[in-house]
Amino acid sequence: MVDFVSGAFKVAPQDTKFITTTHPTMSTSSLKNYKVLESPKEIKSSRKAACHPMLYPYAVFFCQYDEELSERVFKVSMVGEDTKGGFGWAIGCGALNAPPIQTYSKDNINAAAVCHMDSARAALLNLMDKQGKSPMCHFCSAGDLIWFQ
Image (tube, rainbow, N blue to C red):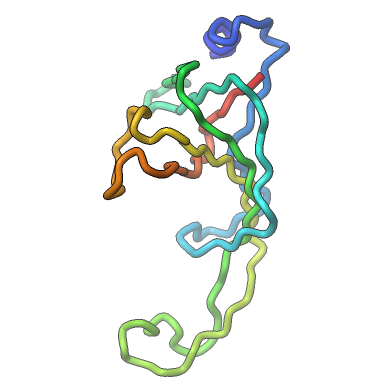
């Protein structure tokens, strides 16, 4: 993987860096809403490559690099929202009128996010009505590596 990235960037391996999504503290439940804690920090670089783990019995990554794509990479700090109290889970179903009590858990995530600025050019499944009219952004899963120079 390092050979692929350094070859694509045409630099020595030590001149490359990567970010990934990490969960410094995580409870057993990751299916919840998350609150962004601060403004996302952009990783400024003209060269970026993404490597995604594949499902094999040993480490295999699918890596992508296209120097013509315009992408912006961000590091985003978030914290998971927990709902405590009463029957807050029924809100939205019309069953209860009492609002849930919101507290913030200790489930922290430092997420890598990629925004494809030219969504018409990017080879992606575009779920928007106006293809190519606005950026497409997504958070990377833990294990995905976003390489940059």
